[in-house]
Image 1 (tube, rainbow, N blue to C red):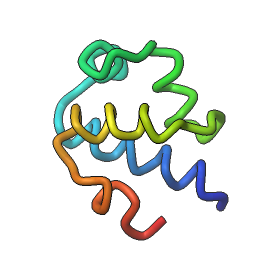
Image 2: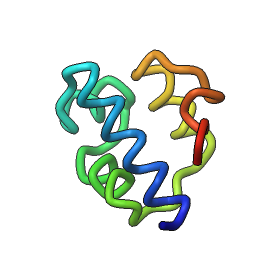
Image 3: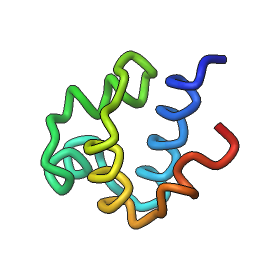
Length: 69
């Protein structure tokens, strides 16, 4: 499995654990819902700036976000 797909699955797992919909995660992080969906499916290469926004919204460190990827 490629790293984009693994990263997307990690985002989805953390989002669901926190009880957030894609729409809510997108709103709170200042991104679009379809972009979050594409990230979770491993279809988008994510900029570091957006990774930071997502990590902050999910309340995880960058280290945790990239662990085991």
